[in-house]
Image: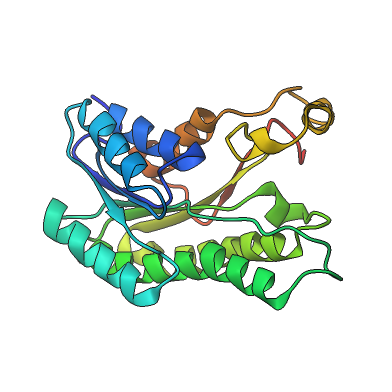
Length: 248
C-alpha cells in the first residue's frame, strides 16, 4: 500500500522546482493533489494532466497565498472539490536578494509577505477542517538560510527563520488535536532557480557540502512524504534539514 493513498494534499507553488517534485511524488504515492501556481496557466494545466496519469484526482488553482482572502477561498474550494484536506505543504516562496544597505523597503516587504504571510494565511484556513477531522499534517518549506543567515539575503533569511518559529508554535497549539506541524530546510537544491548561478559558484557550493553534490528536488519531496505519512506519526515541531550535511 502506498504511504498516502486516498489522502488529499494541497501544495503551494507547484508549477516548478521543489513544489512540482512534491506534487508528483505525492501523486505517485496515491494522494489526490490540489496545487497552486501564480504565473503560467499552461504550466498549471500541464502539471494537472501529468499528475492525473497516476490515477488520482488532481486540480490546479491559480491563487496567491499571500492574499489572506484568496487563501481562505482556496481552502474552501479545495474542500468543495475534494471533500477533505489531510496534508498542507507550504512551499511557495521567492527571493529578492541584495545587501542590507541597498535593500529597499519593497524588497523586504515582498519577501516577508510572499514567504511568511502566505504560510500564516493558508495554515490558518487549513486547520479548520483538520481540527474537525482531528487529523492533519502541515509541512512548511524553510531553508538552511533561515537557520544560519546569508549575506545578501536578510529578507529571505528573516522570512525563513519566521517560518521555523511559526511551525513550532503551531505544533504546540494543535498537537492535542492530532495535527502535526513540521518544517523542511533544504540546502543547495539543483532547480531552475539555482541553474541561473555561474558554474564556478555552483562548484564552490558543492565542495563545501559533505556529500559533495547538490540535492535534487525529489530528495526534498521524499522528506515531505515521510512527514506527511504515518511513518512520522510521533514527530511534530521539528525542522528536518535536507542539505547533504551542509550545516552539520
